[in-house]
Image (cartoon, rainbow, N blue to C red):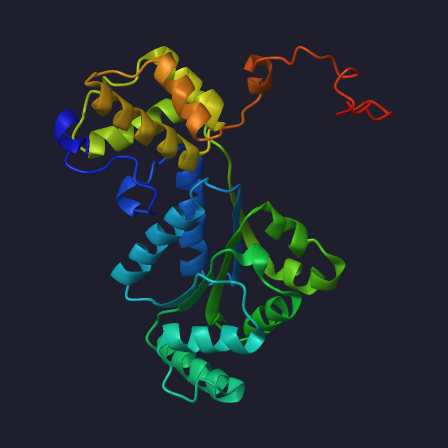
Length: 299
């Protein structure tokens, strides 16, 4: 609703993982380079981890675009709460394997044939699993066994596991030590720094038509970073709501008062915000309920 008001060609703070809006900070460049290197070098297992909202899925979308341009066969598993049978069925569907997709044996034969065919053409194949921290132990074991598909030139199937930090802790479990040893590359995405947050906001606005950002003054940008904790998804939520508020109030710039209202509406939590809330007129001891019940009045 505010695009025409601010002269924007598209929504700059959409939550969808659009590769066009990837902010190429040094850590994002490094992570994407590692993913591409791991695939091209046929390294086998690659792990990508990061907190909620740090841009893992957007990174995977960028990788998918790259694989498309290189004509690399890949499967993308986006729902990780699967049984082993469901996992193989989804993999067969995404690889478009011509086989009985209800039979694990048929899927493995068809997958091996595809991988060998791709290798003979000088190409590789990729399996991408998003939200991998939710994978059950038995599914992770099946994925580990897929890593055994190889020839003298290297791994036939490159497997990328992406997930929250719980994925790293799960991979460190003693019963997954065989899988952990096979992970050749590990990439991680951390929250943005204050300067990266400013660059992130300015980049998204520029790609939407506002080359010289003039909506968010420096003090608001500083507070946006503090309240979002540098997490891109929260930055998008805050900035989108601020633009809506500016539009509704017919203003061209956001203020700290607007940010305070948006923060309350979004129920944001950030370091130090509890001190800003109104304090109770009762102390911690006084807030406890009395041990004896109060006497009831008589009719």
